[in-house]
Image 1 (cartoon, rainbow, N blue to C red):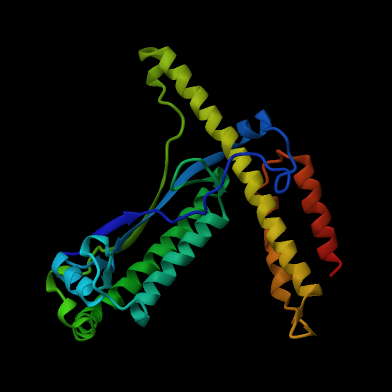
Image 2: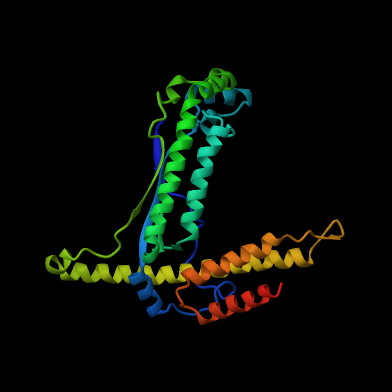
Length: 287
């Protein structure tokens, strides 16, 4: 039977190594790391999601390999058990995408998979927004469940002999859901009395993680600024089939949204980056 898995939204991998091309700073500010540590909450977003792709059974891979005169052991093949283009499925997927995007937009990166840093004074609004997304996801999931039998019947017709009733759970209840949580980062206080040396080591480890978080934040802002300004410059100067490209306000609006997010989440760790953003904002205000 197909089962649901709990997954965290994917975040593009970021290196913590310095690069003068994308990050104008040369060292991490201890004050910035401490500000992050005292003003941010670590939040995790996770989804329970029914897997819609199944690996073919060995005998099915044998049949597929025979058609190409291939070795079954060297062949990887899978099937979709649900039509991901179905409007009801697309609706649940859209809510997941929106919730993940919101989570990334209002937070800063952190060197722990599936965890990001949210300003503590934004926790209330974050919780309300996530609850709204969860309610929307559950509503969309109920609509998908109401069409589940029809979707399975269509899959049986389209998959032919690849269809396997055991791939499908009897119900979709609880198989599309989301939750968020505040993740404890600081070492527990009981370690002070239990083992002071371990507590000291954990304190040092947490300090290093927040120093890395400062670097990740600087890199993320610098990279996004570079991407947005390059896109705007290309729109202003580029040609398509020998004609000037169509300029859309969205290119400028995306930059203005970036400036607002930078203002709200800026950890003031890099005067050089602050100056670059200020210079770009002044230029955009003149567009």
